[in-house]
Length: 272
Image (tube, rainbow, N blue to C red; front, side):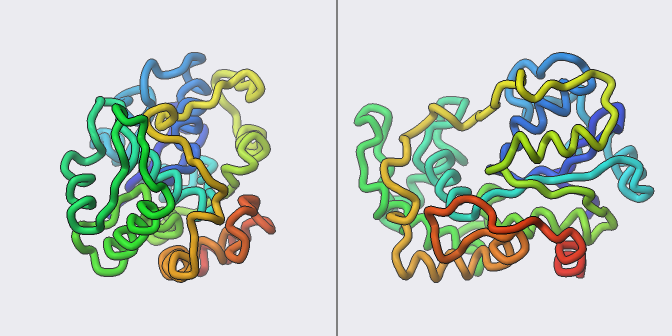
């Protein structure tokens, strides 16, 4: 199985397990900058050089050897499950992608047909009932995760614990798991623990949000998207995420974590 979703600097100063919708564009660009003193020109997900990535075959052996001997400081970043699934909906389902098309081609028409989801268009300024469509999307997301129908679960809405566990199960160990909601503090704790070829001043680093501006803005507070059934579905899909990463299940409007991540608990519970 290897180490899917793993990125590492060419200098091997640091290794990162990508979790989609959790500041991965910013983290990737910071890693790139820390080696080269400049940012990648474009979306860091498209970079095929300047970073080791598991998706690049030539990087496999280097990453495997590094993880096996825990040569580099390894980290990942998590986000509140409520805001993460909402972000996935507005970006991947309601939004238009960087290539000017809908995500995954016929996915949105399929959702319109099977789940009655309406997400509007750029021409009508994305006018649609956000709450109604999101709740229907949530049913679809649950179906993909629980029954792998009508398609395999997508990386953008599958549980963070699932992404994070593959690294542990295959022999990796994290030194740090920090929160998107406390990004500067968390990223600084990583930078403080490593030596990079180029100095990184976080205060001068722009935020890289590759999904911003491609679709509608969220029009309501987080809690308004989640009725009783939605709460039930969210717990079914993301129970481990709430428990391991200390997020508040009872109050969707509280996006902040309620404690620190216990790395020993994460390794014990996700490593089996």
